[in-house]
Image (cartoon, rainbow, N blue to C red; front, side, top):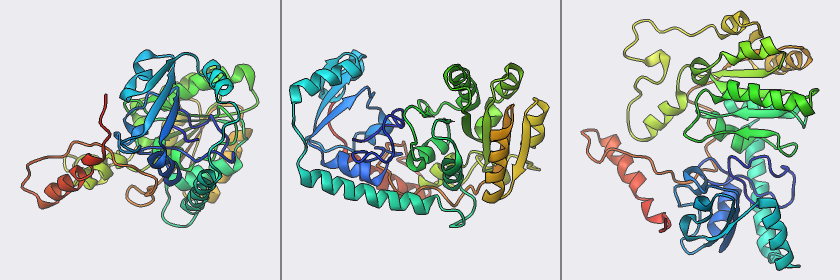
Length: 360
């Protein structure tokens, strides 16, 4: 079994058949399985761009069976469509399949791939292996949060980093929203998630991962959460601008332009926002930490607090990205340019287009 971004908490991390996430923001093990599967049962998935690696993640001759309540999604990519409820549909399929199991060597090889991916994630989230990174912060919180705490992330680099590095501790505890990037969803969505969580699990916490860019776009529900007594723990991981877009800009052969505050050519005197003062002005507990020992202690204080806490930490905008587990992603690159790097990046990107599956 492999997971999409939206389905990241449908299976416990230690389930023996959990091969990890798939696609552009996936895992080496999940993408290994996707590429070799001859039949894929897709349950409730839109089979969107990031999931399918712009339709390069799956073998060209693989056959899809798509179970979905939405007819449009069930028929995507020439799938055998099953329009209906996921739980009822799976039960009906189970009755028809009977005692069938995958060949033992297929399962064994897949599990070996997952073990390799687990080793990578363990090293990737290890504190001290490089400058402050998203992955390290994710690893620290993952290790000390309650299994029933709810995680919320959305735009920028964090959805990919959470999808790749978070170890799902319990069912239904991870909300990674990435449709059209959803900048600004994190805190507002986190407040909504906490309202729902407080009805059934008031003793647990909703933990929001957000970058400085998304925080700037939409942060007023910090005030709402304090006002209504719906406590959040908000981690603002500040990389000084829109660092993941800067990375994409560089990866496509372009020079950095207007994405990082420090090197923005249109700004005479760049400066950072005091997120601690800003969050405190909305009534939240707020503090800034400089390392992961301080982050762990701050998180423990936030867990013990009765109202929303905002924890700010600087992370490196260049180093520390998760570099494995990715598939090809169809990104528009200039066909014509005076710059050799841009032309080379275009040729490199286009060289993988032939791997795309044909279909609708």
